[in-house]
Length: 321
Ligand code: 13P
Ligand code: SF4
Image (tube, rainbow, N blue to C red):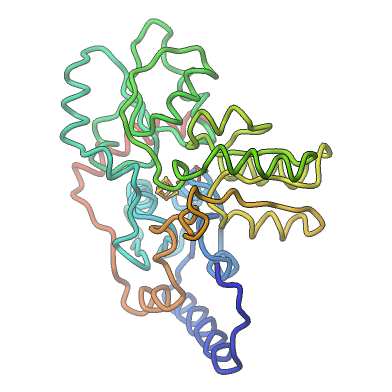
């Protein structure tokens, strides 16, 4: 996140580009969706901000002609799966996700074929190809409910996040086979740095996303999706200071909703880098948003048979409420 004040010229260019985006959004009849991990400027211009489940619902329900998805590729692809009649564009086609990259569809399909009768539950952070071979999708907001919807006598394969998978095994008491994927951002948090922050701020509550490793989660007072962390940190009467174990983009909404509270982002192992920021999410910029609305590109497209196959496990998740 940028901390330096813009110069007068930079500030006026910034206002110009915001005006251009507003004008193009109107002309294109577009809706702008932004994940909580986007830069504050992008969150502030979005029509809807949310976690992956909230944004999937917003994408499904919109009647805008164009959906501009400011997040990462799998999120925009999910929007297209749910709302094929709309043009779905992204600021940067290269904004991927280490979890989605860790699970090539052909290998996941082979894994499933080697376990006849098992249910394949896939975290939404995966490609359309993986969704298409899955039985049901989950997000970090509804994963416990999704796992509990699988009959107790059926084996479960969980893909692609082993950390979320382990956490769900603890929460549900279900045994699951886990795909060995992980998030490069949540894996970078160090237990040592967390303990140092706790010593310096003994009254602080620790809040973590379930993509964190177990040695981090064992210190957490609250574990949940980005929307759940936001809700807890801004409403709990139990503390005014929070050590935040997820991508620090979320701090923008926390500070807006509870300006008198203190939110301390957990640094990565190497404090000299910004490796607690998702490099994929941060590829999106105001300039790329303007250009995407102007050019209606880069555009998410997929073959209809793939979309229909990926839609089925998405619909099963959505039907759980
Ligand atoms: P949420 O489901 O909380 O939006 O998480 C998405 C994500 O990519 C976390 O790294
Ligand atoms: Fe993927 Fe991790 Fe970035 Fe989320 S934070 S989009 S899981 S790489």
